[in-house]
Image (tube, rainbow, N blue to C red; front, side, top):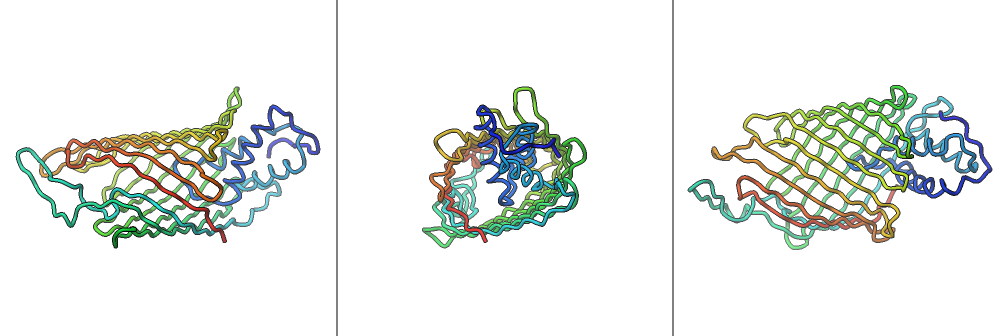
Length: 358
C-alpha cells in the first residue's frame, strides 16, 4: 500500500487537472470489468499512476476513498482480505459496414503466370451494411494479494440489411494476472474467437505467457512494459510468436500504446512475419473519447499452385463518441499481395450504441 494519504485539504491546482483525467479513466476502467483489448490501457497502470500522483499529498476524503477502492480493484486490498468477485453483463446494438460480409473470394480472375482462373460468382465476396446485437459478460475473481483472474465472453450476431447474409461472432478470454514484487507481474492468458460467415469461417486460438513491469519517470509519465511468447493457431495454422509492448500515460493526459509482434517461420504456409500496432488517446480534445489507431503487418511463406505469396497489410482508424449514447469508428485498410488477386482496399465504419448493463 502506498504511504498514507491525508484527507480534507485541497489538492494543488497544478495536479488537479491531471488527477481529474485519471479519475475519469479509472471510472471507465474499474467500475465495469471491461473486455480486454490490445489497445486498452491496463488497469494496473491506471491505478499505479493514480497512486503515484497522489502519494504523500493531502487530498479530500472522497479522493482518498476512491484511491483505496482503485487499489483494491486490482487485488491490493488494504484489509488483506480478498475482494468480492466483480461481474458485469451487458447488451448493445450496432451497425457495421463490411467489405466482405459473406466470407467470399475476391472478385475478378486469378492470374498466375500465363494461366487465368475464373471463380464462381456465387462464391465471390459481397459488401454492405449489417445491423446486429451483441452481448458481453465478464468476471474478475481475486486469488491473492495483487492477483486476480479476468474472464470475458462476447457474442454478436448481425444480418445484412440487403440480403440473407449474417455473421456470428464469439469470443472467450481468460487471463491470470499475478503481482510478483515491486510492480513486476507475470500473466498467463488464453483467447479463442470464431467468426462464422455464409461461405467461410475464421478461427483463432492463442495461449501466451508474459512478464510486465510498471514504472514512472522523472517527467511525470507512467509506463507498463511487457514482453512474452504466445502459441497461436489461426485457421489450423500453428505458429509461435514473440511480442513486446509499451503503454504510457503522459502528463498532459494523453495515453499511448504500441506493440511489436514477430512470428516464427511456418514452412509452406502464409503466416505472420512481423506486425506493429499503435494507438494514441486524446482525452483533452473537444471530441469525447477520441483515439487514433494504426497497424501494419507482413505475412510471408505462402504458396498458391507453386507461386509464392507474401502480403503486406496496413490500416488506420479513428474512434470517438458522438454523444453519451453513440460511439463511432471509421477507418481504411489496404492489402498489397504478391498475387494481385488478393490485393484489396476498403473503408470500414462501425456505429455502436450505449450498452445496457445488468
